[in-house]
Length: 396
Image (tube, rainbow, N blue to C red; front, side):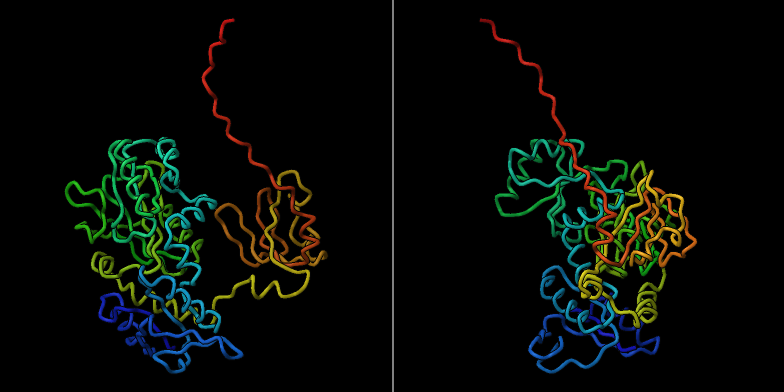
């Protein structure tokens, strides 16, 4: 396998470990400066230039893109994708995870536990937002902060309002988040590779510091995850579109609470704490998957007129409940079921003998007109009515 590692820090621990792991396994590997690429769209096919010359062929690319070059870096990764070069982390996945608000919005619809979060811009909306997440103390986060930078604990509502007003005045966007006091300044970093957690560590804050980041002086120790925490980490990474990710979770009273999904996790802390070859696991995963470059179904499966991809939900009381896929009549209507989602279980390429249950979600490819007739009318959300105190009736 010929592997390119995109990195602006060739001497960094993580870059060096990944390069060494690839060489140790007999692969060809080069570390390429992300900012030295030029995207070439002048020819009949998408192409890349590197340092002014046409880029040679690569089997896979591993992005290690810093915050400051996200836009250009993801453009380069996207170009590799269009050239059918395998990448464990897609450009879309990196973009999703880099913006804390966008990541929370995506995870919130997939039943992933997270600290209560609000996002507002108008000054009048700040106090109600603080109340909605549970009141003070409250955590205030810059949307694109890293390594604990831009994360502030406000002990009182007035202090929180003052901090948020100041940050808004400097054109900063912030999240307002519940403070999870039971975590006691600790969190868990799970390193996800593919569909499993290959290493996990617990980070503990130092002294009065509530942020547990190693860059803030926190300490680390290896930890064995429960199935609940492992499943939350793997699902979060996959939902983001990342096959290599560091998932940070708090230990809440009711289970794991996902704080962040990092698309370029550092390896030094977790390899030191666990004594595991995380870099090797990443390289092995890429080598095993290199023949299957990322496919954007929106580009590939919607080119046929009248055909597309849709998700159909089997509703309780519907005719499909209790029938098998083979007897459902879907294939006769030119609809192919690609994947069946049942709760947190995913059944790829389900067999015709699978019996459908209420609330099953079917990812299908087929004739849009046929699928449109099976999609129920969209349920309208009821507006939450806030009860006002009764006003005294004025006397004549």
